[in-house]
Length: 72
Image (cartoon, rainbow, N blue to C red):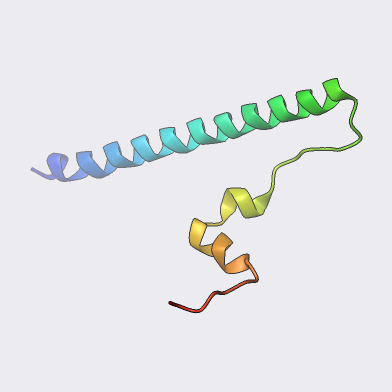
């Protein structure tokens, strides 16, 4: 019986870890593609990861915006 109680959390944890690894890999690929386009255009700019985009939740990013509209 205990085996069945342990299995779902382990399965969930492995799925979440797989998803995080895939998302990180996708972000790295996207960044590499942007850096390649910048180099091909001969632009003097460096693209890199941004912790605000990567680590903040959408709600936290929204709080960084300066304008707060009053409710209608």
